[in-house]
Length: 369
Ligand code: IPM
Ligand code: MG
Image 1 (spheres, rainbow, N blue to C red):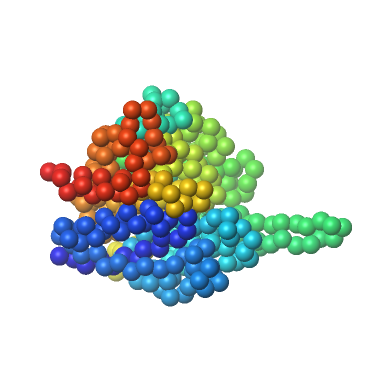
Image 2 (cartoon, helix red, strand yellow):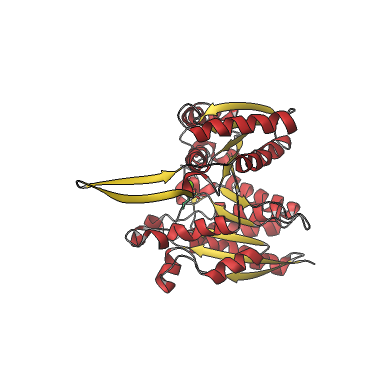
């Protein structure tokens, strides 16, 4: 029996509700499974701001550094629209990504067969869809300096964000993408805007070099980011792994997520470099969806992306691949049985609440072979 230490950061909006279902699943595993999960909790985002006037505390970042994996819900909401930029809810998440050096964000977009009709695209375009967006997460315009708004007189202000990438940052994210592609359909599509951005020129050059030197057996194509967005809604199945920068990855992953029927379905993993001695990576797992303040507290949220994020933690951080497979199979079987939360509800299906969906997944896990 192994004991794993998990840090749970539910956050704001629907974060606590979807995390609640994941916590129940973890308790069930503690009673019925082979391993023990020790769970610690912390505040992040607006809920941390309300309690402490900042969006994350040092002790929470320390706990995240030490945990075997961090599970993160969602942050933000209109309640905190006017708080200072440095302590806005999103700053807590960005600090975790930066301090833990979680440079590789894996965002799979998989269309469960039962949900192909919930997609805004035609069934034949999305049925069987399985793409992986590998988003660079600790660089680019999210963190580049200067990042300022200054008064330039005459009633005018000037806002500056800085898009900046060094060679090593592009090298390490492209290696992650090529490595993952080898275990999939062996194709990487690298996306940037080299036609207008110097960072795009360097991105293209470095990905091409890493490919030629280390991964010549993987198919590589380059696609401009705007075209990539268009292709994702025209013919998404042409893609296997898409590797892209922080900002384009943010946008392209929302588009890809929606192809699968609902943003509420998709998990993600954010990984750091493997430790030279132990091989362990720092890691944080979160749903791709946000805090959805409009539906918070009503039992309408879909817990599948959060539970799927826990399954990804089992797969990538805790080496419990079989259990991850079982959880994903339990999710698929509940969908096959016709259970739907509001976001994926369709004619002839049974609408269930957040906790009923959590119950059904735990039950499916308990009854499977
Ligand atoms: C995401 C989110 C975040 C981002 C926000 C909450 C800062 O949209 O994880 O995709 O922009 O990275
Ligand atoms: Mg986003």
